[in-house]
Image (cartoon, rainbow, N blue to C red; front, side, top):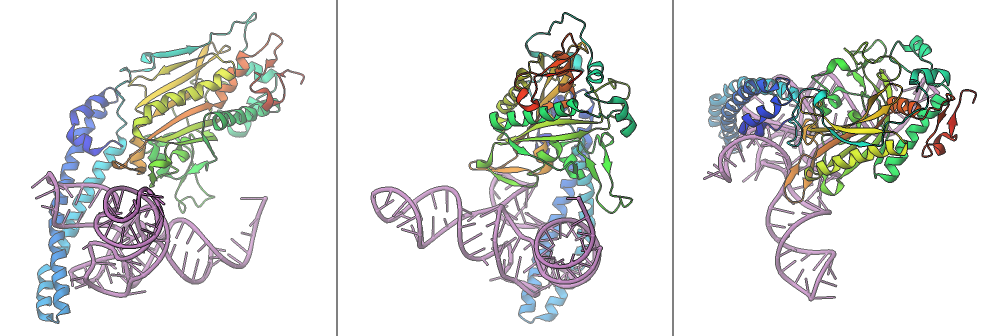
Length: 435
RNA sequence: GGAGAGAUGGCUGAGUGGUUUAAGGCACACGCCUGGAAAGCGUGCGUAGGUAACACUACCGGGGGUUCGAAUCCCCCUCUCUCCGCCA
């Protein structure tokens, strides 16, 4: 959520920054300010009435104490209809506030000044490249062919169980997936200073609202019900990313400045409806309804936000470096960024069998946008209570990392060589057809 | 699922209709004291809106009601704890 004061005092600045996203949100500022003004007008009026009521009530109390009952009764009569006026004006103010907040929740974050203006992914600048595309003396296979030959993933049976977009890892495929998860967690926890978290996989709607997935993108997520009695419980949702539960851990809290920075790392499966994406990259493991991910979350003082973002990208890059993968880092332009983000870097790993780069990490600084939505603050020793910056980044997404790994390290004989950093976890240096 | 007890500021904890603008304590900040510190003493200190600054308004788990007036009385809901039942 944006700061209402910023919108009031600097509407043109806000319109300009919103326009850079190219989604037309700047048009909501004028009606939003009208609701805000209506609310403030009603509030000023009703507060005057309440002040009167409070004063007279106090006088009545004093008169009763002095046993001047007749005078007290007269005063009661005098203020009897005040309550009705107050109640109706309160409703006016509440309605205006609800209208205003409805719009507030649907406004995306403002892009940071350092973000390159642009409309689509085509406009995303490349920031840096690590390594080079590997060269093969043979025609590299795609991951689907490799996985089927090595029996790492049973695509057909996964579809039988759950429909398209689900994966059934088998034998060495399942072991490789588990080894990668363990490797990623250990790396971030022991070398990058994160604290491990294992959160719930189902959360209430407030969590999705807190990070900006609700109300605007409600159709993207899986809701779950308990038995046939769905209406009784508040509805729960399968998390689309560990960001949803983990970023909300300190919702409605007032942290101490000494508690910061908070750095959390969590492995979870992620569930996504991928509505509207049917037929786009649906073959194989690139776009699925359920995948594993190790997520990084930071809560930091605002002045540290962008330093911490750079470090977070570095933490994710380290994964790919240790696994011997070629990748590039790009910055998302203003038109391509997610709803809550002020600045985002994507890391794309090279998949030789696909002949393309795959997004395996997205690292964002949401500044105080999410903190406002979830009312998370910290007590500054010098400047009162402050909304911290909240950052999230994948470190990294698993199914696509799996793809890049098997496609990059495939051999002429059809086997896959395991990078040395991963060998202690998988307990083999190679996966071959007969093994 | 059944029965009972609870939910008050960063924490703790009083408060059962009217000087409560939420007591006291802890923590925190500043000062006195001290060679320095601790202890002690003094002052300040909830959140949000509002104002140039005051004033003022709201907030005692959430929502509704009674009343001139509600932390306090009534109703509904949520959550926590204890016991029982069920259960990996």
